[in-house]
Length: 544
Image (tube, rainbow, N blue to C red; front, side, top):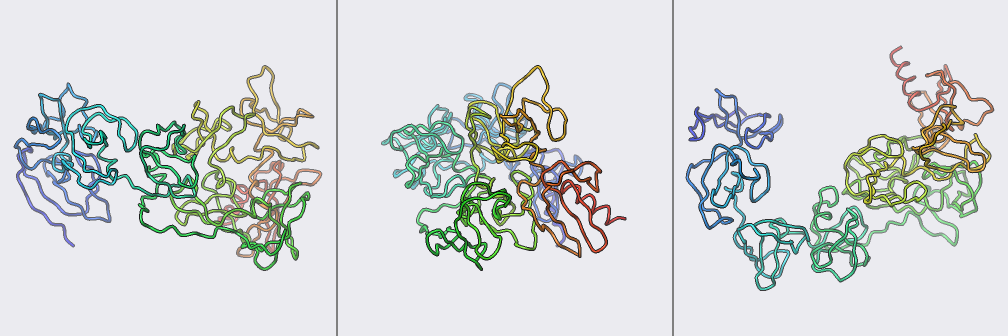
């Protein structure tokens, strides 16, 4: 399709403008947003002399003054010079920053951009979702608290005079029944709520029960601010009022008899609930099984922590607005994934949302963190803003935040085992956080200095101190055994339990992590200290 051109004279520009339909991806001079992309046709005005471009919806088409329903006392005059210096330079309706073209009332310091001038809000709303009566626009500056969301407003509320209620324009059509990714049940909008102290389960701030918010009919303590519940990273955008709720079976196993189950990840054999044992790893989370009860296969070496066996088939999580589905690891064939929250490699179970999020079972089970020995306050997933983790100093997209202070914790540190066994000590090591000290701490594993203000592992009986990475390595979510077999090459995870540490065939250092990786084919076999070294070695083979 060939581009379409039409030249027009518009009163606000000195040169004729070309009205164009084509493939344009430059920014609009008024709103500064893209006028299109390389795969979509878009409309624009373009000046061949000034090389400027505008959306048609961003420019005035008439120089006349207008009467606006939100400012009925005086007409608004068109200004081509931008907002006056005495104003706040924001549109009085949408609160967006004003650009060159505005309609303005000098007497009242009332300004609107072109979009709000061309598309004024309705003066009356006969059947609002938020209220049983019709609402009328009060087109004036007035300080109010919105009955729909409980937040402050400064101008142009919609009012119900008989009920003495005021609403933001955006709150008139708040959805009644929705699903959010912070809760497994549907939540409903209501105002006022029942009188009691409430905390928003998204932002962790107080909720004023006299105003509108969302609550769960099944869980009386679960409440969410209206604006928090309808955030794009929390709500999937679907109104569920009138949509029947289906009971979904999320149980991952069938009960055969007391203490015997058939799990969906191992349907060929039944699993028996038994007491713990040492030196074995769970198929679900890949972490060791110690003294706790677990399910073991009667026919083979398949086993699951009792907690992992009860992981639901489907669940919600704050990192995705879509439902997550549990996927098992591939037995005897090796399959690796990368967790989107902690960036660790996963060989066991993982949750996926079918779009972009993959979570290991630990991160999928975490939406808050509490350990008084590591931080005095609880931490929550409140937003998806990037932040620097206080435990390791790494900046990550997903962090748990403290609402009482500036402390942030990423998912990698939030899912560390609090107590762990390591070959460097006969006792268990405990995850700890020190403070400023005059002396220095030295890691028992690598013999390098540690920062006592960051997290580390220590033995309270012996006083040994170890870096977290030296104790964990990159194998926390990897079960010993075959990981990948492809094109005649195998990668196996092997416990680093020999009397002497082997040398890494890539970096040449002694393998200090609890797991090493054996890379083998018909012509060679060698060991590597990390998956990163394995990949580097494979890359070298490919180009050698």
